[in-house]
Length: 224
Image 1 (cartoon, rainbow, N blue to C red):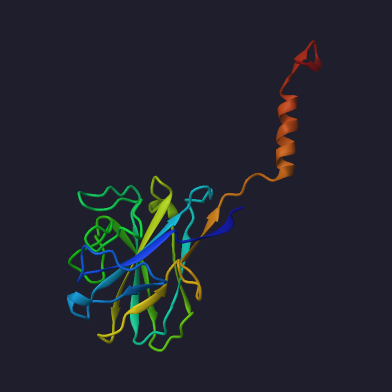
Image 2 (image 1 turned 180 degrees about the vertical axis):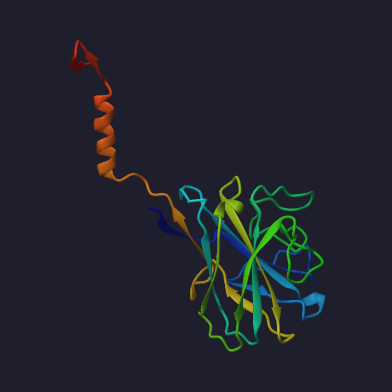
């Protein structure tokens, strides 16, 4: 029977259309802003999780958790995307080992450079959307679940998720707590793992292995 595991993001940052080659300040908040604003205001966020050593059940699903770091000043529709397994970057694009200190609008894996919300449809999958209502309090946690983890785990055992929004009012950003945040919940991914055999099962396996060292001779079971 599968058990649950939770990991915190190893890298996360936002990128901005208005400064396409600039790494944004790696603060405790990721900013996202949708296409109701002029293109100069577009912002999207990238989050990476490392599943190395977790023995993840790739046939199962996962749930992303995100917390607001600042109360919502308008209503946002938040769409979560995932980088498809087997992603191979083109020239000038970061690979699955991207870092929060190097990612920009122009080099972010799976980005659609000309869209304020969406990602490259041939490299990513939309996992679904949820709504953040105006005046939602800081610290509120939102979740997005998805199925078949194997579709998004890369060869280096990382999962990259991305966030884009549309919004009602032109001015505000959606403010999400990053992995550097010490006040609100950091981005987390919960998934199922395949448990190691229990100690009793290991003892039984050992006994069966011992019996296998005996051979039957002349109708008797003798040590091999």
